[in-house]
Length: 174
Ligand code: 5GP
Image (tube, rainbow, N blue to C red; front, side, top):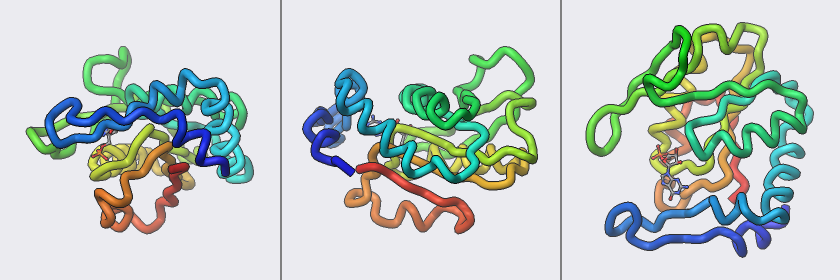
C-alpha cells in the first residue's frame, strides 16, 4: 500500500469545526487523481474476493468511495442517510452523540438476507456512527457485514475497534 500518496494529499484543519479538533479533510484526497486511484485500488484489493453484493455508503463523504468501489467490484450501492432524505419507507437506528441523539436510515427494501454488505465511511473516530450503521444493517439479516474507512483515528480512540461486534471485520487504509 502506498500510504505516502494518501498522507501527502490529506489536509488537516486545526480547530475545525470547533477548537481542539484536528479535522482530516478528505476532499483533498478526492480531488487528487493519484490519491483517488490509490484508495480505489487498495479497497478493491481488500474486498475483491469477499463476495460483496452491496456497499452501504454513510452520508455524505462515505458516498464517494462507495460509488467508485461498487463499480470496480460489480456491487450495488445503498445510501445510509439522515432522516427525511429518502423518499420511500425506511428502517432507522438512533445513537447518542456528544450533544444529543442522531438518527440514520436505509430504505426498507435496500438489503436482503442474501447480501454480503460492506459499510463504508471516510473516517472512524469514536465509532458511534458506524456502530449505529452496523446495527441498522444487521436488522436486515445479511450473510456478512464488513466495515471500511479511509482513515481510522486509532491514536485518539484506541479502544474504538473493541466496541464493535466480533463478527464484523473492520479495515482502514490510514
Ligand atoms: P465517529 O462517529 O466515529 O465519532 O465519527 C465519524 C463520523 O464523523 C464520520 O461520519 C466522519 O465523516 C465524521 N468525522 C469526524 N471527524 C472527522 C474528521 O476529522 N474528518 C472527516 N472527514 N470526518 C470526520
